[in-house]
Amino acid sequence: MIEPGVAPMFTAYIVVAVLAASANAGIAALDFRRSGWVLANMDRVGVPRSWLFSLGALKAAGALGLLVGIGVPPIGVAAAAGLVLFFTGAVITHLRAREYSLSYPAAFLLLAAGSLVLRLGSY
Image (tube, rainbow, N blue to C red; front, side, top):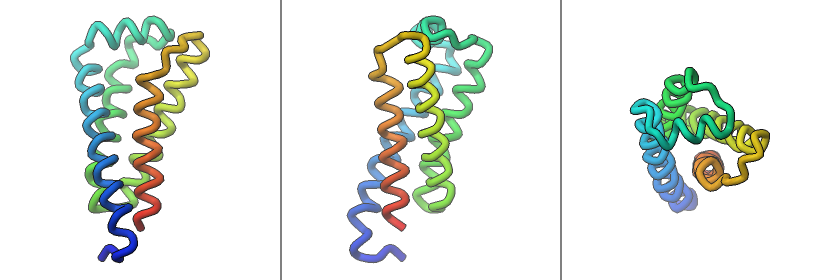
């Protein structure tokens, strides 16, 4: 049972988790389709194309975990933490490649971090 004082934070968590899950599911689908935009981005930052399926699978798993985490808090925490680590790595990869257009990885990182903070705060 969610205590009354926690209800607004839980509601915020649901909204952010669903947004983060949708964004990650969408980008995972682009990975699986081998979208030209994704391939060009990977080439710019030096990520081998052979990693594409694995990276898409991690994003899809994170999206699913965020949704399951609405009902099973430890899974939501694990999924959000995993996505924070994943997109921290993406930002670092962009910076190491001197690719400073960070809007996409930073947006995904912020959604994941928001999901993590809100999930932890809504226990």
